[in-house]
Length: 211
Image (cartoon, rainbow, N blue to C red):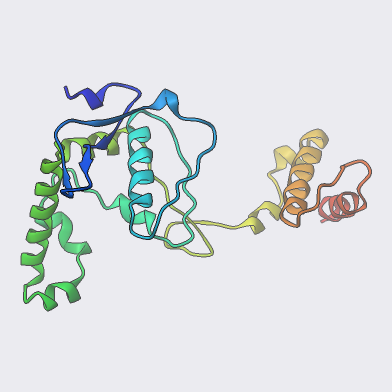
């Protein structure tokens, strides 16, 4: 087993020679216990910020460490397009046919070219489809899409739906549900409200309770 498959060791690639612009021998490993609570990744456009962060998230997933990625641009869901077998037919439904036409290739031939590109690229970094399989087996991936049905839609309006009878019949559970909903709503408005003294909290709680 490669050194980077040890639990708690993140494989980030290989050392890179900036002068020759070529990767060097050896492994670039990061000990996950050195991670801190907060971090920031900065760099110029195209310098590899997203690639580094994705590598960290994928290595964490392989070790069973969960993550929530908030992606306003909508690029990260493409990471779910990973194919352990690396077969041309796996790539075929997802290729850009305009790119294939510009290269003078049929879609099937272009898909084959992409599969070979990924096979060779992974091999050059000492990896294979087996690591992709490990990643897919190590975590469940879910895409939430506020305001869209492309993934699992997310809507705060569902918080206002009447709770089930078991909660309606239990005054303590009902108060907790109303309190949580009102605190969340006021939090979105930037209002820190005391449930006992806040006029906003008391008003909205009363409206939701009556409704």
